[in-house]
Image (cartoon, rainbow, N blue to C red; front, side, top):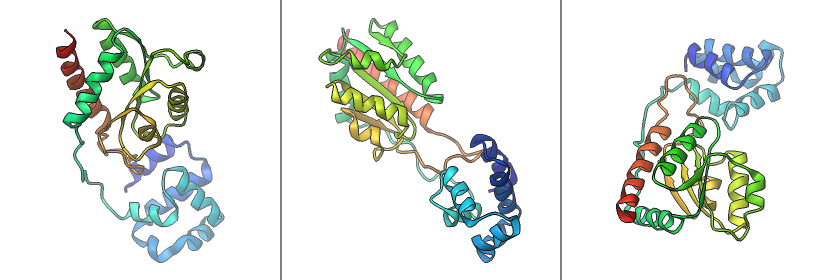
Length: 232
């Protein structure tokens, strides 16, 4: 991890002055972090060890030791995006066919909202009744109705989207989840999960490629192509 990565993290996670100072200090002394130890870092910066540990957790690590490890390794792409299998394609086609005339709600947050908007416009182009707006009240009032929910989340654990997915499941709605990990909460709640298996909590490096969004877009296009060939 270099100083550019550190500034990226400070900006992304909106670290306060003390947290920023800790991270910059660790970047400048990354070759000696194991020898220094968390108590020495705390002493040098006049902060508590708890402040250092909490800062590490704030940016996605389990604690100080895991953050030290990240400083001492280079980023490598060690996995290609996973693709769906024939069983998952069949299940997707069945769900799309089942809800051909039903409302479809596409849910996303942050970067995923851009995909949600595209998915919705794509579906509407072919005569589906899709919306990319996530209305809690709409879900609350939809119990007993036939609705298809599509959820897009890189981590699969986005709190708001997980809550909406839980509500959809409780109301008996089918849910298709597009996520970066099958071990996520949303993946486990969904009727069908399409996962790229690319998500890692440490994928916040400035120059690290984020393979999720492009991969999911490609998979959606391929799955919809197969579905439309069946429907028309």
